[in-house]
Amino acid sequence: MRIGLAGVGRIGAFHASTLSGLDAVDEVVVADLDSSLAARVATEQGLRHAPDIDTLLGSGLDAFVITTATTAHAALLRQALAAGIPTFCEKPVAATLDETIALAELSEATDTPVHIGFQRRFDAGYRRAQAAVASGELGTVHALRALTHDQEPPHAAYIPTSGGIFRDCSVHDFDIVRFVTGHEVATVYATGENKGAEFFGAAGDVDTAAAVLTLDDGTLVTATATRYSGGGHDVRLEVMGSAGSIAVGLDDSLALRSAEEGATFPAGPPHRSFMERFLAAYRAELTAFCDVAAGRTPSPCTVRDALQAFRTAEACELSRAERRVVAMSEIPDAPVRAKATA
Image (cartoon, rainbow, N blue to C red; front, side):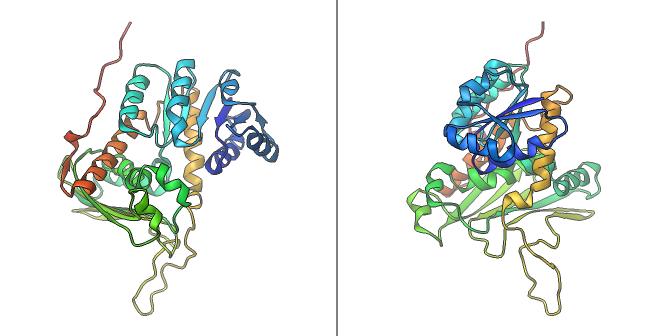
């Protein structure tokens, strides 16, 4: 399989290295708006590079991976769909809700598969939690607690382009709640504050946020996010049911320390970044994408899935701004249309 990858920043270079190590992949070709960067990454990893992304897309690819800046995702996905190339796209699909809706409709009108990069769906802990819910092992699920706590904030220049903490951080929690429970969000109430660097407020963002989600079956979800988790990178999910409870991320890397005398758990050390925390999940999702591109399996995370997580993030931003409960029916969605049959 010959795979092209556009965008060789931190996550792009990481994905290129992962792809080149997969048995299903014969060749990885990279490109970037900065052609010298693409050439350097290709040399360092023993890959090929194309002089530009348009040349890459026209070079006879079996699959395409988009890891560019968010602002380029939508246009590249449209190009790939027009060329009929199976595509993996890092989240978000687009910078705006309207464009995400348009891409969901476009994707569903074609037979070309698109796999969106919500890597938590491939983490062993989250998959175990989903199985526990689906099997009835936990009884009636009544509450979940999801969190994404970064150890330190990104560079100030990133924040104005991030879309805000709900779209950038909590969107992963919103997606995984749908994945684990099999239910949709019905209403949200969200808030946020700044106690850190001034550049968050200057961009209209917050550095710490919380949301209460009510799912369509009445299950309650609390989701928190922060850019300042000094104890380490902390990503967890707790699922509470009438017959039992289960937690994802509750291991020796837990970025918490007990206040109880004599407690020795967790032993540490904590994770320091999302790439470290989800190393195995990233490999698993790209392995799955190769199966999607080869036509062996359908996409495990579609553009419509990405849209639903994005809609929840939009509802949270509206709730935070207007300090009220927002019903998901207030947030535009893509209509579900049956595919045409011959």
